Image 1 (cartoon, rainbow, N blue to C red):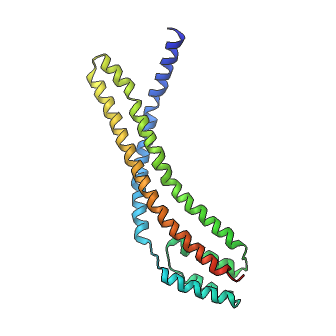
Image 2 (image 1 turned 30 degrees about the horizontal axis):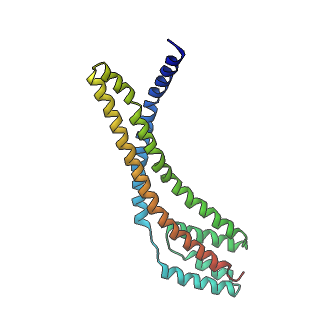
Image 3 (image 1 turned 45 degrees about the vertical axis):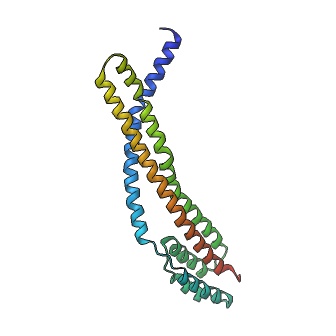
Length: 207
């Protein structure tokens, strides 16, 4: 066996040895996608955005801050009842006001920006990596399938084609789920970020 043939054998051996890890990863991604769908439905059922109520509370906060009444502003911040991230930010901002840590408010806003980006990264990874794994799961069995075809082994050909098509379908399914969830959540979190920024501006307008 010459050097070229040895290289080809090594390439074939390495590529085929990746089949089982790829299949396991795809199955894990499918489970992750199903869990993400459940989390998405739960989050959707809990979302609550009342712009009129938020506008009223922020007006009261501006009034309290302009009169140097941080206690009143804290009370109004804790009365905010919006989506989870907006309400959570308002409560943490109230603690900053109580402790007179005005400089911490902008840092807190930055932390929430990072939190929102991190939530989107999960489904973005899902929508990007899963189709790649599906493509790998499609191409890897093609080698053994072609070898089976050349030897007239129809059973080996059929088994490898089943694996190839199954991994393709699952990879596209997970990728589609991740893409749709990313798009919808990006719009949700954009609204949340705008509300958080509005609350922050209400506190810092006169300081």
